[in-house]
Length: 390
Ligand code: NIG
Ligand code: FE
Image (cartoon, rainbow, N blue to C red; front, side, top):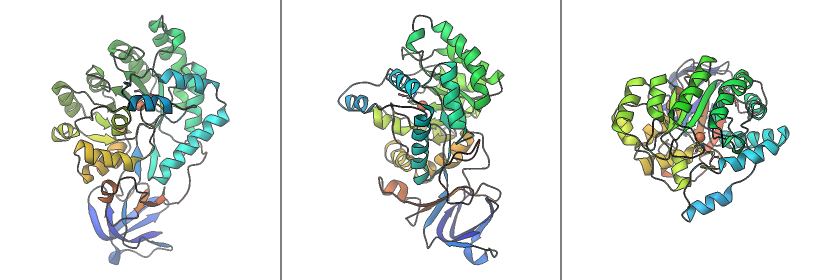
């Protein structure tokens, strides 16, 4: 199949004008000027529109029940976000049926796909018992291979008096129940938040996950300065996410370790907080990813285009930097080299925009510019396939 007539094709190594892409068996087989394209058995005419790689959303929390709209409303009139509302979602999630959780997950993945996302990482973290966490991950695994065990999201109320016992549970029976359904382990490391985890607790959780064969990632430096980013670099984690409050030593450590800094500007928008300093990271040579963090508390957007607009307007990233961060950066944060770009051999995840250039993603915020999404060369919706693409 070929998609030709793109006015601007962003491949991840450059931009081709008047381009065509040839797809074979779900992979990119050729890219270049349309008038040089090899023959194909089926053609899709992009009619001068821009084509970009499918977005890679490397941070989301989609397995949950309930609604925290009132918490958002309170924040907009002055209340601070401290992660305490996570426990509200835990109560609702534990009480929900598998069918209800699955339906909500599929609804959100479908929203994401309509907005151009073709690879999604999904965390657990609203179950916080071995059975509830394993259930969340098993449900997510039916829709994406990028599943993350986040049993260390907060200390649940039943363990409030004995944090050590909860860390023992997370690193013991809970990890054992969850590891078969997860690719990654994560922890909310935020010493200033009363229900989140400190440095030593986070190190114990991450080390246990790594020893069980999982890759590592972390929620770090979201609400204030802290040890999370340096811990990520020390342990060689794939990504440190949030990175809102960084010291010079944190930035140096990120640059030297190769740990990707994942920025989640939808969170700062939805919690009325200062945005991370993306320019400082980019100028220091740190690899940056952009993701939604879609969750019912700190940020309930499923839209990468919205986050791109925030990145450009509020974090002073160029449109090219923002698009790269939401494609190649996200792929790198998931240690994937088959997605996030359209080089020959990549999975054929393509987004056709109703616009002549990717610049319009930030230039026309809030406008549904995503016209067609191909995942592995096909226009399909997310569906229940064990370990399949979302
Ligand atoms: O990434 N910071 C911790 N976890 C999520 C928020 C989860 C929630 O508030 O429900 C985050 O912002
Ligand atoms: Fe998160």
